Length: 158
Image 1 (cartoon, rainbow, N blue to C red):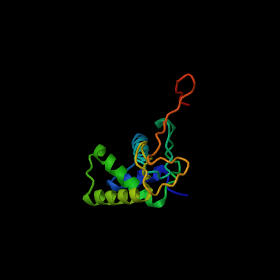
Image 2: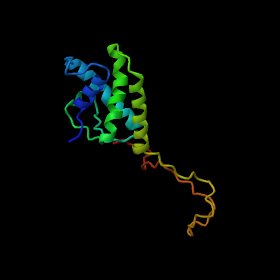
Image 3: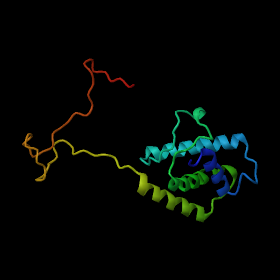
Image 4: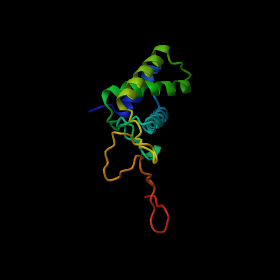
């Protein structure tokens, strides 16, 4: 079993000096931190950093006791980044060491989990001598229409 969302949130509060074993965190504080954690993971997912975090369709569907399914190496980056995000809301200043550790953990995460976007050779681009497609016989990449619609020329999103 991996880290739960609650454990990541409590670790982030611990990092800014509001450890849950000393300070009683209210349900509103935990809910606010959960929304920030979910949005942080969604932002990373949008940047191509896929760590397996369970993204929800709305904040109301998120459960704080859900297992995050993230690898152990991603946990530190996630709770340190969350600590950096929630600290100003509680009048706390994150230490330089925490900021440096968050940057190192995020960079390590980028190196491991970032998925570069796929690129295709644009149409009309010279293919080069290594391209051995005997059927085409052209020295240039073919132009391909990437968006195809039905007979009625409307595009439906399912």
